[in-house]
Figure 1: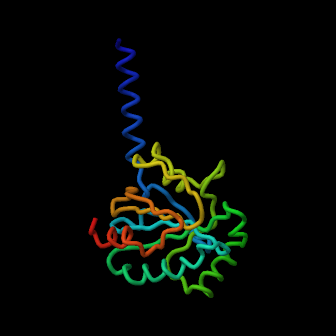
Figure 2: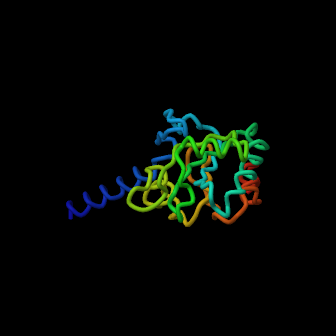
Figure 3: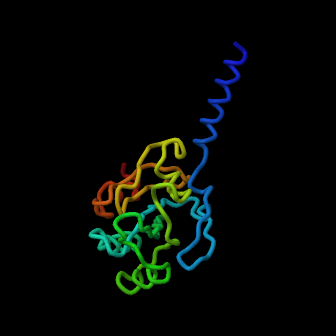
Amino acid sequence: MKTFISIFALLIALGVSAQKKSFYDFTTKTIDGKEFKLSSLKGKKVLVVNTASKCGHTPQYADLQALYENYSSKGFVIIGFPANNFMNQEPGSNSEIQKFCTDTYSITFPMMQKISVKDDDIDPIYKWLTNKAENGVMDAPVTWNFQKFMIDEKGNLVGMVPPKDNPKTDKIVNWILGKQ
């Protein structure tokens, strides 16, 4: 009986510690190779988006930039993670992606280095975003480019918006404005 109770207590402790991990526990690299601690975003609402330059959803860059411009003064930031997981729609290097984003969409929100958002080589940030066992909230595997994850001011995952949905959807805008 003591063994059973000990094992049960250990399982509960492991479950609690897994749920305590937040977005802020991760460090990544910017598209130009500089270390970026996500803890630097404490107190802000963050929209995390996996991007691609040659996708039918690529025009969402314009709406993401508009959203960023409209709400960044309200403690909102967008983090773009280029990924080439879907039909080779982000084949470029980090410098090519950066040039495309700047020249074509005048992107000013932070862009990170190109990563993988699924499969065996999934980046640790996306492993946390997509797995309930990691984030304590939901399973939300990335289904395509431009899937959007909402992170609250405390570094908790609070929602996801599918790739096809426009970034300026009511769900995202109301969340930014605290009108849920």
